[in-house]
Length: 366
Image (cartoon, rainbow, N blue to C red; front, side, top):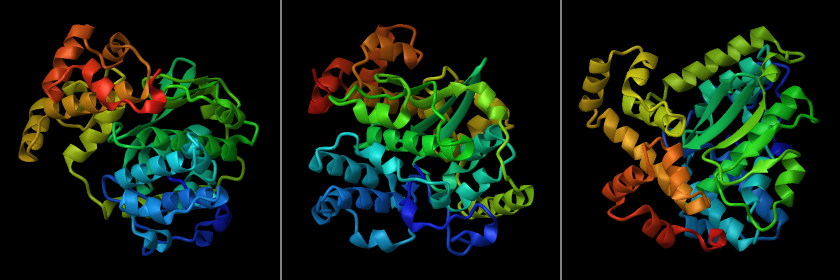
């Protein structure tokens, strides 16, 4: 998510004119693509670890010229690259190292917008709304539950190779964003990761300085909701409005279909018990019949998209976590494990247990 190589960027917190990007230079990526700064950040981490990148790039299907290009890169290709890099460097927390390199300045227009929001809550809502100008391979979500806030990151293809490393990278990035806005001493209440615990969890504790919960249903930072009211020192409303207008123009230049938007929503909602067509219709200011008609015109249906989101999440949880089938069934909102097994067999042609045995990485098997 939105990662970059911090030392090679210019601090643009004092005004939009200082930002390196403009409407002509920076473009919002298409669905399924991510800003090439992520590739450059991976490259920088691997250089530090004396890993030769040429073979990895070829195996991941990436052109080396991507390092010097402003063109977005497929999210799945980055996933393959970061997975290969983690394996080659024998560094299972490589995603964490890549995300740690992010600064507000390295995020271009998005970072400038966040820096000039009035409060932390306004900044995180702006991140939720406009993360797509850097990352169209996943969705950022901000949920508030009584006195607790949850900032989550949900990839469109959670089962894709390397997606779990994307999740770590994104959480490290979001932690750096919050530390830039709140001070370097900020720590979450806890960090949630949908992966089994690696052999060495020390790097996670050292960076987040908070309890790390592995084998969770989603990737998220959990913190007190009171933080959302904190004012951001030095925020400039005029700069915020100017940058926000520029971001709106970038987003308008990269239109998406209702199907794309609904896929984004469902991937974050699938484990939150909110995959209901009526709710989505209200959110999109459409009635249920209009929603169905527009989706049918795009060659799909709500039920099909919701099932796809459940299937993707199920595969990720089966492959990357040690959660039981009952736990996965529950978080995907099935009435009972048998119903989950029936649905999974319909989607894949096999049972969840058989799929897990065939697809779980060696590093997560016990």
